[in-house]
Image (cartoon, rainbow over all chains, first blue to last red; front, side):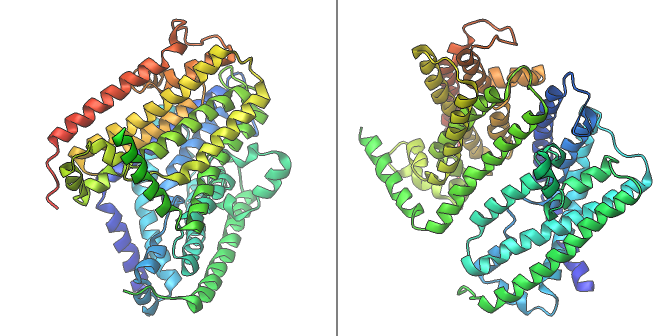
Length: 263
Length: 266
């Protein structure tokens, strides 16, 4: 356990050193939050509610999604693939700790930093400039934090599997770009899944991708209450377990194929 | 003419090297198609629920989107070399460029040409075709000219943003993320009716980074829509003039940066 904690801590502090990049990043996420907000404000003109979202909900949704970008790190994470390319993977695999667990710990450390220094400031911008509403009930916050943690683990599983494909192809940027694009769409990052046509909505709400953005956001917005919250968290947890198993299986198959690049 | 030949030769070598990694190239080209594709689908999905955006119909917004995306794709291909300036400087390779008897900007331009952005270009084409089907605007010769000049002007504006971003690297070495705000934020703004944004944002993207002048106003003219911002009627025809002015400003900043470049010591 101590090794995993150490890996998480190390990863947290590694990101902590890039403070200028963090400020630039918050400005960027905030700027796009601003642009996306104006689109919804214009759409909602003469329209109090649509697909179960009032304008204020839609705005909160936009800022939550912008704030989640870095904690979820959905865009172009190729760290493991890099170790395959450089050959560093050989020493990583011989460490006496679970390979998946080691990388998950590192990613949780990173996500902890990004939640504190990217999620929080981005949400602050939303609160200051668009007066978005945040939940007041402590239980909603608790449910949201659990949901956010599950979302991060889910996103890690997806990224882990994309990277492991590197065991076969060495270059994963192309695959990563393609898969994550569809992921962005099916998570509800671009628009809330409730806006999808009914047939598509019924499917996308059940997919594992919904657990990345859509479910945490709905919990934050208070769209689910009581038992519904447990149902949503259960859905996330179920997919998390499935994906963790899938990731282990894929890794198992991949390590048999592994050809370490000279070095 | 000699310079153009040199540019062509260097780029041809670049392209051949990119096509060596076929699978990788195909995947990246595909992903450069799907990125904007899901954005386009997202817009269309929202238009299912909401009838209009700031007085614009789905087809009209798709037209804006197509114009902006096509221009961005061309600009990204042309400027991929400029976008690498930061790497050239950091690795000390820029010094090598300076001692060759060819214009540094031309050499930087020729260091890269990302053909894989062709996916985005195709996507822009798809959007423009879709818009054509949805709204069937009345094309006249003048409208065709306005469209063509809007496309070229927007490409120039995007290239200039890349150029200014690269020139800033002469001082900061590292490429700034703020450049993304202007390039991709600018694309986003240009893809939607300008009137839905805050007045300060409108002013910023009309007069400082003239993407609104090169996309929004020509589109108003081509689609025959009244100007919601009530600006003078000659605005749709300013695009090429403003784009050239903006480019001159970019070139000045580049020259100024070049004179102040001191090397990284690497």
